[in-house]
Length: 146
Image (tube, rainbow, N blue to C red):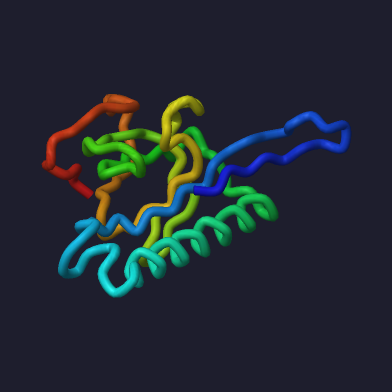
């Protein structure tokens, strides 16, 4: 996670946000195929790749801000960073490519995962949101239909 603030020349903040990249991959901490196996090689590679992804997203969003379009909301279900339960959230789909969905939950800024989330699409489900979708809820393991 990268916390970013843009400050005006008078020293007052113009905006604050977080950029959170997540590979989505689950591994045990210890043992075979764990994060710490081979001197933590898998953990180091994952942290570096996620940091690179978050930095690239931040740089793009600052130089050419992604649109936050209220008419094109997206529903995402998955494991959000720092939260144990599987969640559903409605928010802004900022960008999408073959591997990643860049998404901002429209939930304010008090939750641990508030900000720009960059998800590996292999570990989430998503679709256009409808007016009947709940903005936020804990969900079971059944994914949304895409």
